[in-house]
Image (cartoon, rainbow, N blue to C red; front, side, top):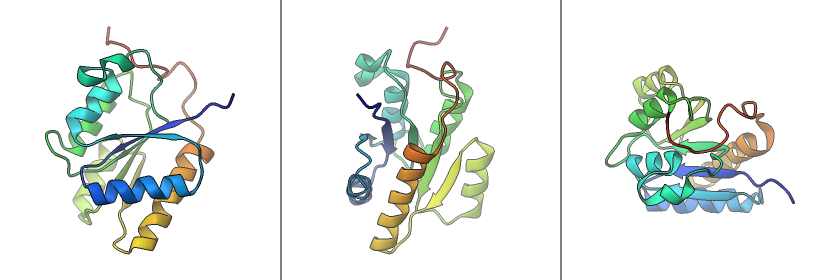
Length: 156
């Protein structure tokens, strides 16, 4: 049995979500993509809380594709909380945003983002960019050593 890796997409724009999911499906990574539509939902998913309490003990995703402009809790706050918690401090987080603000890029890297990618405006370029990101983070990237961030569990 192959070890399928999960991608967590945190995206509140339905059109962008659909395009990202289609782009990832098109490259046949055979991975599962879970979607959170706001920052609080992403945190609940990653920490196995709230509506995702049944995920407690589950493996963390291979990568989080995180938009910055999110309802309830913004992307930078989500990133800060992930980096502050020992369970998720090494979890790869790639910012995927429409922001072209240099301060957003700087703040993302200062907050511990592993990557910052601007969503291209062109449909074809957007799809190609997402496909390259998916291939890199799931098929090419070497994750942190086992034991560093293995599963979702309650903080000590």
